[in-house]
Length: 112
Length: 110
Image (cartoon, rainbow over all chains, first blue to last red; front, side):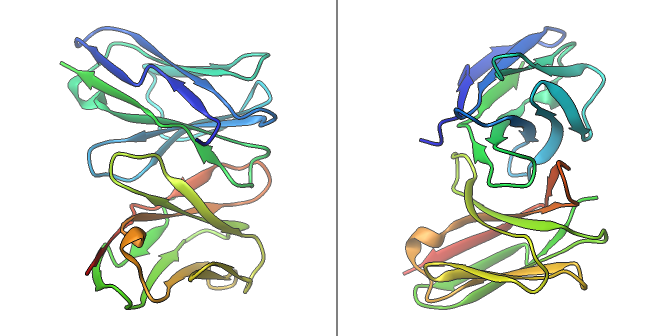
């Protein structure tokens, strides 16, 4: 157990819908990352937050947004979902930006 | 930019050695190595922060050549448990994001 909790584990939704993925980082970790992993693909960086502020952005679509709350948990919002958004979404946390990151078990999103 | 990993896939027999390479076109501050088993979350192996530094984790070690912007992961006397996809991640310093390569699939067979 990495100490990073992601909910839900599985999500099935229709095209055009909006979903929210939640991540609770390890206790004490200030940095949260979101990654997207499509079937048998690598980890695509989406966005990073550090202590509530956005630190870095990857190839995150405009339909996607995220935030980190004062209690350090983070949410990733995906809207106007398309079939191609089906993927495993990982959240990871670390103490700082360049230290060991711990990954959650991921949320498997299926858009039908 | 995404670091480039090679090889893309490798099959080993138990006890054999392997090397996985990671290179970047950008100046690097850090290199991170993770292993992901099928259907599971990536698990941290090691992080290298200084040029030329070598680190080890049991029979897995890595080197980082800051000047060449390259890192290599060395797996010695491989075990069945080493099977999985290995990702290198590169960081450009400070609080910068870690960008992962496309991964190297490693399969160890008896």
